[in-house]
Image 1 (cartoon, rainbow over the protein chains, first blue to last red):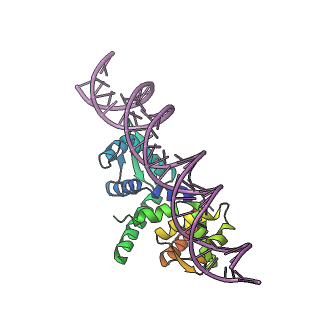
Image 2 (image 1 turned 45 degrees about the vertical axis):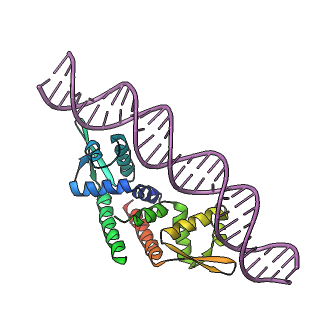
Image 3 (image 1 turned 90 degrees about the horizontal axis):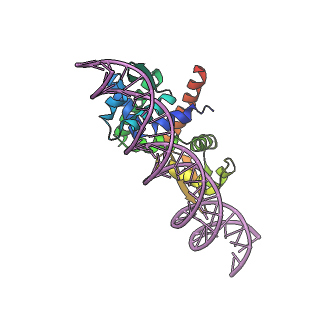
Length: 94
Length: 94
DNA sequence: GTAATGTGCAACTTGTCGGTTGCACTCTAG
DNA sequence: CTAGAGTGCAACCGACAAGTTGCACATTAC
């Protein structure tokens, strides 16, 4: 029983992190500072979320000069699709 | 953006609850007291988990005399399948 | 070189979660 | 009718997560 599941579901359990995933899916790439403009919290909080997502293998970071750009991994992109499908699924059932 | 997703992912984020889902899938039905034999915690803790799963719509309860039997809902059964598939998926990637 | 931008780390606060204990209630068995 | 089995509710505790603030470090701009 892989406890990667713990990390993944733990990461996905937070609405802010799911939002980050959606945003990264739309924008392709973003820094913590950029994302801070989209969420009602400080840069450090966003940064923590990104770290959590990275630990779960849903996001990867690349340091470019003084900035760190984040993008979805393959697994992260797959989850973005699943989340969209699930939202639709729940919407239709209503 | 349905916050049912919060409930579902929140429920799924806990290993014990995923275990309960697996157990209910295998057994078909169980009471809190029965499940207590399978998990290293008290009946009340198990009961709380079942309530959480019920709130997320993954499990439903039926009171029969002095006992309360729990079973997977349609959605709960679907998630059991997805979890199995995901575990396999993660296993193969290793 | 110096100021500004972008980041990371650490300490702290607050709220929630998983779990326990204690008790009252309901139902069945005999 | 009474003992025991099965449950539910509420209060409590410890741990951890989300978020904040403060500061030091690295990089670019001028």
